[in-house]
Length: 551
Image 1: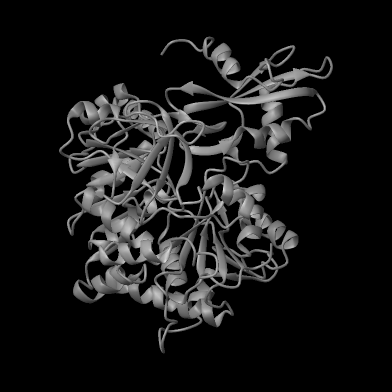
Image 2: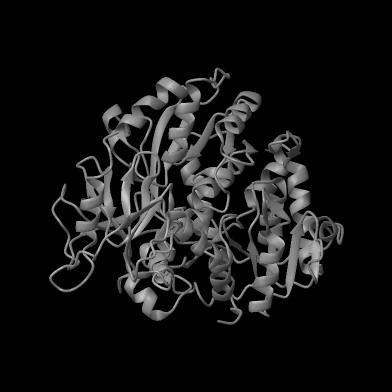
């Protein structure tokens, strides 16, 4: 797929005009650029701190606003044009936030790619978006991103520009972040940004094997951040800790970094989500709110048994990305001193939050209720018929911040969206009389491991090529820490029995991301099949879940 020519062309039909008019009249869409709140606070409170990184370096609102302008000018002077795409794959640093806002100001569309993504995912997203530029760090821990960038550029000639934060090394044709920022000073006029145009691309969890591109507009995503900030009680005294990868929707705008900057708060950027890093930053900077996934919460609670750092400033702990066990929810206030807020949402749009006024049992057992009164929900059976309240069905949704199409083929969009604009989420939920949702699983075969979602079919497609395997099924098994563990159930083609580490290594050599590698291996003579001759995943899950010791 070549470079897309217009950010309006793929989103002009996202919301029919009658819906768009209603959303504007109700004030959801304000007609502002996504970076406008940063501009506003740079004028009203220029010296207030906007960002603090792990090392303690801080940036004021005025300095971040100016740096965003400089970055925008530099990107345009570098040869990028409004409407073009840049893959952004950086860790949680001040450079990432500056580049993000620089792209927004220049009308360049950042494609948000996780630092954990590797060749397979990056190639897919770069090709699908028609990206012409790619921003990377030189390395994170032991992984060197420069060979990855070279691989992407070799495979996709339209990726003509490489931007490296750190040492360019021998990477041909690359430009260093520092030199790029020295190119231009903020002068002249930046491009006018159409608020109904695409501001950025997020990525889906990849239910069909690889992530899909999610176009979010300035109008809908700014509402997403602002309304989330209001629900969470954010204000000028908020100190938000971003410990999840910022390329995720959750820490970016639910309310995340954008929500905090929309109210004049402070954002603290964590280089990693380890208990030592997180607890240290909470104590040092008096963090008031942060967001995590259940697998992290489990680690934090375990570490807290031996850690006495002062976490008293922490008022709210958002938990999302995977279902939170009620027993774990009950331990959070006792161990971490913060109120719990469950968040259930999707990068495609819909967000659900438990509220401060909710009864304790709702906070501990439900995944919240919709953010907006104009979030329209249907809970349906296999034939698309709405089920009675309280019964389990697939969640369909449309609303002022839920997209109506992916950047994908008509066939993909026809499967994902109804003709009248409802997004078929694939989540199985039941709705309480209060409007709160309880998530019961997935309609498809997606694995949700530590809040990273991926398709079982993708891993099966790789493993079936292994010379020692005759047949394979990949399933998600319940795990208290991970939410789900990835289990490969294999049938052998001969007498050679591969070990789990052998299969993990094999998948790694094929460019599969680390979080998708199997955690467990089971060898069977034959896979269990349904009466229609298909792999009976439910039976396999039941069979091997029985072998998991009780927690």
